[in-house]
Image (cartoon, rainbow over all chains, first blue to last red; front, side, top):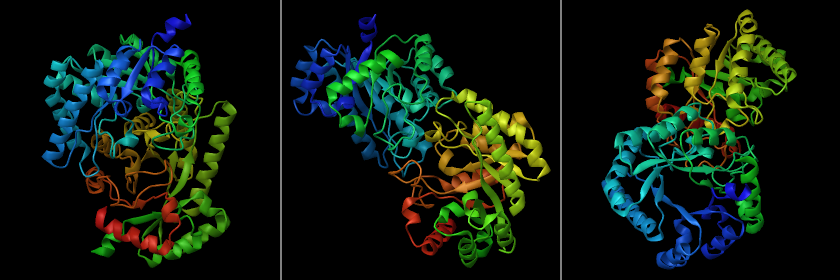
Length: 274
Length: 274
């Protein structure tokens, strides 16, 4: 039973940021974690080729590469640079065998949200052929409205679904992260809509601490906060999602812990609360 | 021209938290501020009666009392206590001549948002007769989704308008605060809807700093951030609102400044950016 459940547990390398990639792979495997989502910074020390070899022999399922996106820019040259960077990210995903890239879509204080959203949709549209050729999918991750200033102008699953619908490409879907979306009264119906669009490409979990002491790096372990994890999981599964459940936690507190202890807590929290 | 504009400038006592009420009144008047919204903590040192006398003779328009609300509770006794506290708040508003109370509706980590929203609507409904008798109106203030854990389960103007519509009482409307709502792609249409309901009871301004260093006390001065203040004001005015424009800023940084200097910056920022 436990091993069946663990077969869907994936951990993001950023969750255990202090561990270099080889050590993270070893620790995840030792603890029965089944999947890994790789952040680009984790690839840098060994380089893409060595990292890819390590991942291929790891026995872990490579779930996705984090992250592409950041499409909006004041000038056309900024936006072109962003597209180039996204193409490099697609190359990296293909090289490490990641079938998916998570997109943090971007926002720029000087650009109105409505314009930023248009630039985001245009940017994703421009990437689709390249992503298709590389056999890499793209997941739009709506971020919490507290990141609307400079991280993402896409702040609800409604907005992400709208883009998926407009682009109408099997290459483009959504990443549903409970941290960003738990508060939204449209979440249940929008998850169903994502399911109808065959667009649920990723599901991320953690928890919302009360109080939250930092806007970026104070996410909670599942069960430590107020997010109704079982309920949201039931919505996602009712919508047809049966993929990996990814633990993505940014936390100055947890990054200071012994990371093996932390991973053990993650496994327990995953079994008890997700 | 400038004095005409200043005729709509109101400042919240919490904005200049270090100033005791008598000093705040004097400073606002000296700087040409026309209205004052009083926070309950500002009434405590002198007591209601003395504070009321001071306010009556101040020449400032008393715009509202902050704040009531916090309706949800795990037990019925918690919820009853909250209603009693709200009745005391209504008494205070009546005593100081404030025609309006702003409601921060509340949220409790152990209570599902959907249930909290029901308790909020029930709580406001229970207060309406008492508020009517006291000739005090109630403004539902939707708070930013980052406060959905323990401050407010009402996080969009859509939700606030829904309650106003259900309760269908001239006593109940909304407070529109740009800090909480600027990111929402439904804001323009929901402001129009509030207008159609004759429900725009208050309009609060400040700005969203990038980066925001603290979830509670790092609001920016108007013009310092990314909120499209002129655009949102145009929506509010198109919806028929011609009342006070209230500056409500919580900021550890500004509270450390000389408060007269800070008020001078507020006046300039109000004239230049709102």
